Length: 394
Image 1 (cartoon, rainbow, N blue to C red):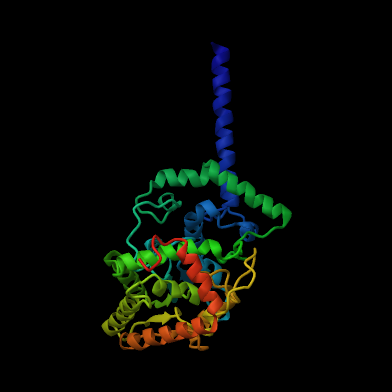
Image 2: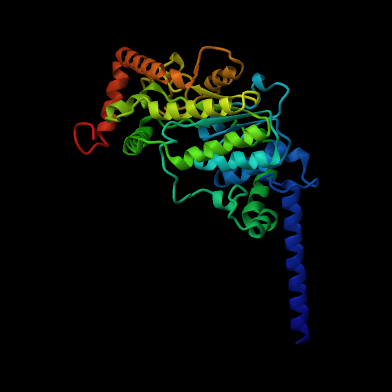
């Protein structure tokens, strides 16, 4: 009996030592940047990644990890395409908080969490086409519910996971291994992806194009809950004296043409554009002395958005300036960021009374692209035909 008690005591002491060691290891490595501790290694910073399965947690940790003067928010298009170290941010510490597959439903809590901890000079919110007309998802397969972004998450459970969780320890091991090998993390310490992953040709994206175009056709109206999120973002920026710039993100011209091909009654996004232009105008009229709310529209047929498709549909083949039909390369993202200072001719600052003319211009640009690139149009029509239930538009 005495031997059993000694064994139990030894086991408990050993278990406690393992737990303490795990906590100390995770605190030192802090792989997700979610442990606000002076004990975390500064030398580890270039090796801390944005883990694929813990993206929301890692980006929230990034927001918590330092003092930021500016932030970039949106989906993977931000994560890949908008460089927080661009010269337009000189004198400001800017972070990239773009979330893979993150629509406004997640960008809003990410931005809200950021604003709760910071008083930035500038916020750039990038919105994907069809986001405003997409209803809120009922199920989220990401780590959102386990991250600091979800106010309903269990705080105690979350903090225990960060300090002694197996998943965190696994990430700590990966991070220290990177450091030992001298291999930088996939994202910079500012949250920007170092190198995009090129698809094996562009064909796999046509199913997504079809789904998004049909979703826009079937819904068509701006979701009131999404607009309430935007109003909240405007309110928070106004309260902190933050300049808010909204980007209507570009898609390659071939993506944009799919909406008309599939019979969308609003294939040039007049409803979406009007809602965003009106939002900015209301905010600016309400307090003309506050930093402005700006709506920059990049979804058009500008030459940047109309490079011809690669002739060979092989791995790594991509249109110039684009990873695929959705994601811009940083070279294109740089041209968008230049507009923060009014530079270049890419994109248009859109006001409510300019929406009609903008829609007409975009239609003319896309018609011109189609006339100059009949092979691309044929490629699109053949791809969409595979997903249609009937020969004509549904």
